[in-house]
Image (tube, rainbow, N blue to C red; front, top):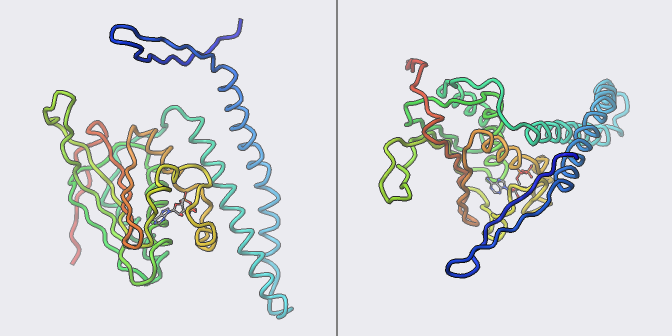
Length: 278
Ligand code: ADP
């Protein structure tokens, strides 16, 4: 017989009786795997034709047909969007089917924070006040590639959903000590990477579903912003693989803070030297 996967739930029934409910989820998991494979295959197959379309579009010279210029520009913009969508779908399928991370290392946080600052400046094009604060004094242990992509997604969103003149802050700090079940404060604390903005904010009713694939608060604003609707799903999967937690605090019209909480087991002494340049 093929292996069967059971999902078990223990439900309190009365004072000294519990119910154990076992559900056969073999077929459900199989369907979920088929869905993932299908998305991954379609995305992969779309890559080549998109590269060709994109390549030829780049070769067309709008100055030869000035009346075509707006159409060419729009086709280029849309093919770029589709390429990003396919790349994000592939990233998501890869993360969904991974149960552990390859290539974990101690990540030099000062360098990563500096990269995030440069990315934010490039996206903002001087329309926002960008700040980076680093008070943690330690480094993170994890996948550099995946964490970089998760943090970049949060920074890109902060810029996208904050009108010109607003502020975007990336903060890397020690977490507050955790209170254990016994009520005692835990001895070791983790760290938090926080991306805070003074933008549009997210209505509370949307928060529980915001990390779902393609879930968007306002479709028109989000579409115009050029995102794919997959950014926060990617962030959530990357954090899960690091046993980290995403917390979102937001107020409409005031802004949002996305905090990535990493446990003490992800903290490493800082290896890199901070060299203060004049
Ligand atoms: P998108 O590509 O649409 O930005 P995401 O998964 O990154 O997709 O985000 C999902 C939705 O969450 C966005 O469409 C937007 O409505 C909302 N959102 C994400 N980040 C922010 C933010 N910093 N401020 C306000 N809304 C946000």
